[in-house]
Length: 419
Ligand code: NDP
Image 1 (tube, rainbow, N blue to C red):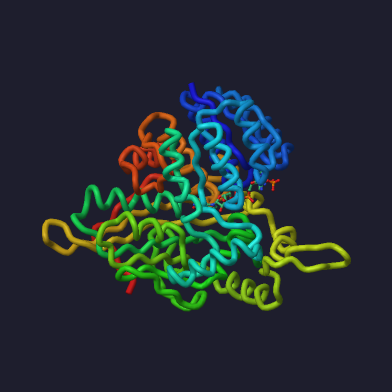
Image 2: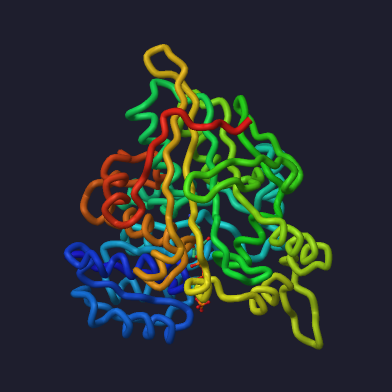
C-alpha cells in the first residue's frame, strides 16, 4: 500500500493527480498539498467519486522546509512528488532527507531571487567554468547524491516530458538501437492554438525565463552558447506539419552529456509562432520579464510576477486549445559498424487530453510522466539510493508505462534530419 504526498496543485500536478487516481491499485492514498489549499480541496472534490484512491488535502508553504518536514512526519508518505515550482526543489529535498523519504520532481532547481549575492557569485563562477548562462543547472541537486545514498533513499529528478521522457528515449535508443550515439536532437513542437494573442502553456514565469535566455548546445565536450532565438530551423512534424523551431538551452542536455557515453552533439529545439516571439520581445524590451523587484506605488513588485497575474492561467487553456503536440528525439549513431538514424516521438492531442483529464496537452505530457516516474519508484522498478535523472535507470518499464498511461511512443527509422 502506497501513500504519496503531492506538493503543488497547478496545471501539471492536476494531470498527475488524475493519473494517480486512475491507478488506485498503486496510489492507494494521496495527500494533495499546496500553498492555496482551496485548489487542492476543489480537485479532491472533483475526483472523490471517480476513484478508489483515498484523497486528503493540506496547506503547505514549500519554501519553508520546516513546514514540509512537519507535513511529511504527520502524513508518513512513501514518496513525495514535488510538482510545485523549481524554486522549492531544495527545501523539499532537504525535508525528504531529514525524514528519509523518496523524492521526485519535474524540473531542476532554479532560485526565485537571482539577485541574491551568494547565489550570484556561485552562478557567475559556473557561467565562466561551464560556458552556459541559464539560471538553472543540476549542480545543486546532484550535490545531494551522497547524502541520499547514505540515507538509503532515491531522488528522481525531472520526470516530465522534457526533461524526463526525452531522457528515457535516449536510454532506450542506446539500449536497443545503437552501439554508439553521436548526435541527439530533441524537438519539442506544440502545434496547438489557444486563440489568445499571447499566453504560456505552463507557469509563465518559469516559461518566459527559459525562452528569453541565451540558447546553448553541447558539442565535442563543451557548451556552445548563442544569443536567444538566433538559431532557427523549419521541420515537418508528423501530425502537426511544418513549423519554425528555435534552439534553446534545456536542462536535460547537461545530464545527457554526462550519461550518454561518447555523445558528440546534443541540441534542443522548440517551436514558437511569430506572434509569441513578437509579444515576448516587446515585453522583454519594456522590462516586464525582469526578475528584479521594483518599487511601485510604495509596494515592491517583481515585473515578471506582475505579468504572470495578467496572463491567462495555463490551467484555463484546456477547453480552448486545439491541435497536437509532437515531442521526441532524433538520433544519429552506429549499430554493428553501420551509420544509423532513428526518431522516437509522441504525438498528443490537446482536445483528447481535455476530454480525459480537463487539461491541455502541455500539462498532460508533463503530468503523465510524473505519475509514471512515481510508479517506477513505488513498484520497486527504480530503487537505487542516490540522486538520479531518468536516463540513468532502465528505460523499459518506464517506456511500457508511457504506453499504458496515455503517451504512446512511435518510431521512425528514416527520419528527416535537422541540419
Ligand atoms: P503552476 O504555476 O500551474 O502550478 C504550480 C503549483 O505549485 C501551484 O499549485 C502553486 O500554488 C504551487 N506552489 C507554488 N509555490 C509554492 C510554495 N511555495 N509552496 C507550495 N506550493 C507552491 O505550474 P505548472 O503546473 O505549470 O508547473 C509545475 C512544474 O512543472 C514546474 O516546476 C514546471 O517547471 C514543471 N514543468 C516541467 C515540464 C517538463 O516537461 N519537465 C514541462 C512543464 C512544466 P498556488 O496555486 O498557490 O500558486
